[in-house]
Image (cartoon, rainbow, N blue to C red; front, side):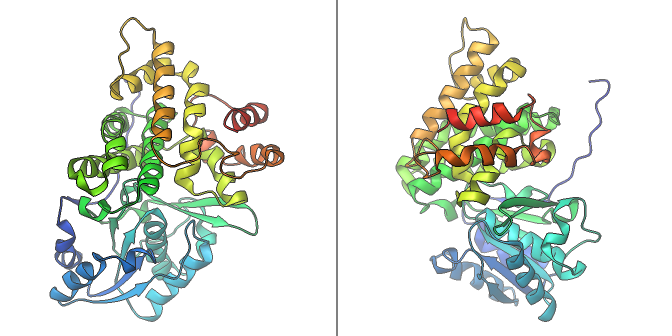
Length: 387
């Protein structure tokens, strides 16, 4: 503790609560926005709460341009299009409304609008030279935590790789979290986004860059997700408490991720998305239990703490045994949603595992942050264990 050094960054303002979407116009006014770019998931733009968002802006005397022309796991060129639109229309604030893809697109568009260049130019760590347009994020899933992180992840499909823009300039100025926007999320999406949040919290807690502040966020996130995920999956919008708990847990997991980073689960998941189109949350969900088992011997004390945060009875167990219980509980949570529990179930051919293992080790920002070093052979063995 004597050598502890911390630099804490994040959104300036967080608004959380049921019905808070109706405050959107007022929050934009706080940021002096007048001409707004809304980057929204195409499906979100068709949902009944989307007109509420527009109405809140209009009541505040604001105009908005809506951009929905991007895919899940977006390509950097799609962010280029959004940034160009913001420049050409002289827009002065960006709202990200949707899941992680929409918010990552919005954050990238905001910095491209003022910095120029291409999104791919800035993939790496702290390559963005200047501040972007003000940004306000509105998540519609309880999963990615992108509303509070400094990262925007893109898929370069031709090169079969994923990479992120990582810059303090990507932190949103405001995060507005309304649990009601998640009430109608289908069970499968509830499960894989919730498990993505669990992976963020677990990996941040045991990472090489963990610290007392990120640990605080991570453990509370694990506690909330462990308590509410199954209820949110099975009861949907009929259980507002579970939806609220999951959104708060996702937010806290994002705070932990922003402060401590993630590890091998994310490193191993990237090739699944880049090579085979597997969604980020689904990939993390399938890999998390195996990565936890692999890492547990490196930090048994922390994995035991995770087991207790998950509400498991660890009486009479040493830390290693308790930590293994945490991995078993993660596997149970994977099974609560309609998510294939194996790589084979996701349609990944066994012959692809060696190429994936090679690619995973190149995701150094994640792999170097893992609590236990992982060789190519160990990465391949883990893929096979998850197969």
